[in-house]
Image 1 (cartoon, rainbow, N blue to C red):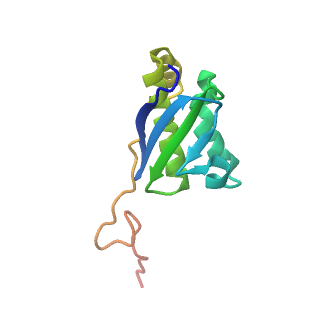
Image 2 (image 1 turned 90 degrees about the horizontal axis):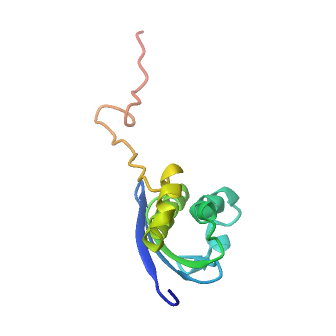
Length: 131
C-alpha cells in the first residue's frame, strides 16, 4: 500500500474533478494550491470537500491531489466531494456502504436548463401588459 496512488473522477454540473489519493498525512491540494488558498474563507466549501474523508474516518491517512476545472466554486466543491468518495471506494470496498448511505456516490445530474427563444430565460417570460 505504501506509495500506491488511487484515482477517480467526480462531476457536478459542468465541473470535472480528477482526484488522486496516496497514503500520507491528510494534506489536500487543489490545482497545485492548498485548500485554504483555493477556497479562501469559504468554510462550508472546505467542509463539503472533507465530508467523505471524515465520514469514513480517514481524514489524516491520505494525501489528496485534485485537478478541477469548469463551473463555479459550488459545483467544483461538489465535484471534488464526488471524486473523493469514488476514490475511497477504489481504495477499500468496505467504505462503499457508508458513502452510499450518505448519497455521496450518486452523481447529481441536475444542470442548468437551456434558454428558450421568445423568453427572457429558460422559463421567465417578458412582462405582459393587457393595457
